[in-house]
Image (cartoon, rainbow over the protein chains, first blue to last red):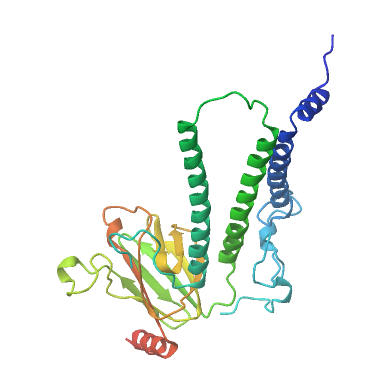
Length: 87
Length: 228
């Protein structure tokens, strides 16, 4: 005999204890941003190589004005005027 | 430099260290507020009668979930901003290399022709009066003040770490790897640091001394050293 579904039990419990809603919200935001950042690193980081045949070393193909970091505090990468290091 | 009984950070001599000190003060106040609240509640629990009137506490659950989340955000946002700010190295005026050995540092200013030297600690037996024990070196790292300096750090044998607390710099020296850091000195002066990764018997006896001077003095020093 099947009991109530997991989702139904969950929503009934939360309705009885509404104080849990912000907890669920913040934990979801936290875990969600961690997972999303990991995905961003996996897919967009030039240090990661997925396709050994067609793109074996993506870190060798970095552009001088591309921004690879998540947040640029004071450097405006789009208007950086250098295509090679200055020695 | 550090005193024996100092509690806080050394005065900041670089903009990044100023940011770090401000963030530390901010985080410390947050910690103080939370500890005071917990201590108050603890004392309150110890002197009040126990009662079982309140068993369902939905409202207070809301408060003590949302408030800590806000506190964490208030800590995370400035922290991440400073973290990303520390990573930005644009257009250094000078690049110098610091190489850790057992048990001294060697520095190479390859922007100039042939400017490199070793930096050994001055032993206490040879220390002139009034100088700082275990901190002075025979050749200091002279840099021009108020200019972005890039330091590339590596090691020749085992792990070391190049650290100058007042500039907010600590970077590991790893054999076979180049680590990059940068700083700007906001004022002229002499800034001390010590090797910060255990590297053998004389790990405590290989300090780092950065001397920040106005540009004309730096140029005089560099031409003196590269010609000799």
